[in-house]
Structure formats: C-alpha cells, structure tokens
Length: 389
Image 1 (cartoon, helix red, strand yellow):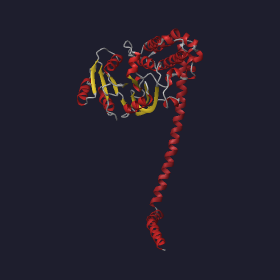
Image 2: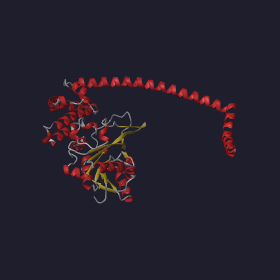
Image 3: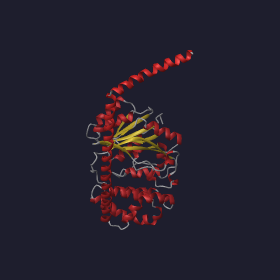
Image 4: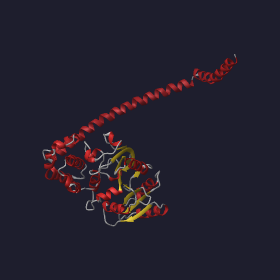
C-alpha cells in the first residue's frame, strides 16, 4: 500500500469556517505514515483555497474534485484514490485526537481486525460543552474480536450508523465491493456501515474517545428533511443480504435494526410529513416482518414495538410527548436537587476557607509554624549526639 498505513477521507462542501481546524487535527497525528484525502464537492466558499494552501504545505494532503452532488459521491471518489491499508472517514467540521491513527491501527494489527470501532464525543460551541456517546455495554467486545453473526445482542449496541467512528480494512471493503449508495442524499451511512458490519468476522472495539463530532448550537432542532431516505436505505440493506434471509442470525439483527432505525428517525423527524412517511412505511412495509420475528426483538425495543402495534401515528406521537414530559419533570427535580447540593457544598467550602484564614492569621499558628521549622534541625542534632555516644 505504498507504505501508507491509513487514508483519512474527508468530503468537503462549504466548510471554510471549520476546515482548517479539521485538517490540523487530522494531520497532527502521532504517526506519520498516513494520507489525508480531501474531496471538494462543489464548494462555493473559501474551502477550495484552504485545501490548496494546506496541500501545498503538506505532502500528505491530496485534493480531488467531485462535481456530482452528495456526500456519497465524494466519499466514493475518496475511496477510489485511497492508498492506505485502512480507510477512515471524517466530516469536514469535526476533529480527531492526535492518537487516532496510532490507536486504531495498533488495535487493527494486534487483532487482525476488519473493522476497528472507536468511541466519540458530541461537541457544542454555544454553550461550549461536550459529552461522550454511550459505550457498548458488553465489555468483552473491547477485549477480543467478534463476528457479528455470533453476537447475542443487536449490532447497534456495538456501533451506530456513523462511518466516521470506524477504521475499515481497505481490502475487506474491496472484497465486499462496497461503495456508498449515490442515489441517497441521507441515511447512506446506514447502508454502508451495516453492509460492512453484518458479514464481518473480526471486529474490535476500543474505548478511547478519538473522534469529536461537532453539533449545531445546543437547543437547535433544525435539520434537513430525510423524506423516505431511511426507508429506502433499509430496503437496500435487506435486499443486499438476500442469501441470508432465512438465517436466524440475520433475522435477529435485522428486526432489531428495523426497530432501532424507525424509533430514532421518528423521534428526530424534521416535520410532520417526514414523520407520517416514516410511520406509514413502518406499518405498511415492515410490520408483518417484525411481527413474524416478535420472539427475536431485544428488550431495548420492546416499548417502541408495543406502542407502534396499534398502527396509530397520533397515539405514538402522544406517547413520545408523555416521555418528554416525564423526562422534563425528572431533570427539573434533579436540577433543583443538584443546585441545592451545590449550594451546600459551596457553603461548606466557604466555612472551611474562613476557618483556615482565622487559623493562619492567629499567633498560635505562627508559633506552630516556627516550631515545625525548628523540628528538623533539632532531630538532626539529636541523631548526631546519639551517634557519638
């Protein structure tokens, strides 16, 4: 692979505000045997100029253009030019840890892994705060490789459908003939990640938070309407595994993936049209499959499954509202409790500070300090006298 251990593929579209920070973090690695492949996807801002400037100053950066719209086209172009043994992905407004390549490749080589999945955190700028995403609850997956077909829990517990938290062995992707579905404008990760994950025989998780996923300002709920992209992605994934439809391991993984995907996308719908499109597809296209495999549904999705059984989108929406109200009351009470405890702790600290100030200003304290300073030489003198006797 031309001595290149890893290729970091970054699609770029009008990312001037964050691009230099992104590339700096990608280039500032503890290993040097990697390349950064940037694919400009028709940017109209200063992104192309930034890319050219950095590429001229650092030979590890290679810049390509892809005029066909969509992140799938840009990532596919990046993969075509990648020379690394492993391929990693970044979004152009995110950042990574300096140890990303080193840690991912160390784990990959130690375990001969096809996929290395690392942890990440979610970062906001207003207010400036970050928090880690949930780890897989099955600790054994951090200790040795596993095959997805052997899991006794849904694969979604091990990896979310986000390509930028996975190092993929390039030869494994070629064996699968895997590319991003260019007809999709969203949910393309869902197809790519699980087409790679489900047949994998050697997957390893590492606990390190190596990727920093930038989110819009906290409180912002704006995003694009996915329309039916999620539904199309599920159908594409199902069809891709046609030879395995009768295998219990596939039925177990797919029925839980259906519920996981619909639960998330219904909850995060951009508008009522998207919500209704998703809900109607759940009932009309997939409900029979889900009911046939009722016994394989994981406990994590049982509540959603029971609520959706009635086929009434308004009832499901009301149940979501009830959940929000319950959570709001909990956090309101919890916040009040936390504030009360904070005030108690602050008062205790103030009292201790006042006591310390009084002690250190007293004559007895100054005398004690003086005696303590004399103690060491006195002990030395006594030891010497004992030594002479």
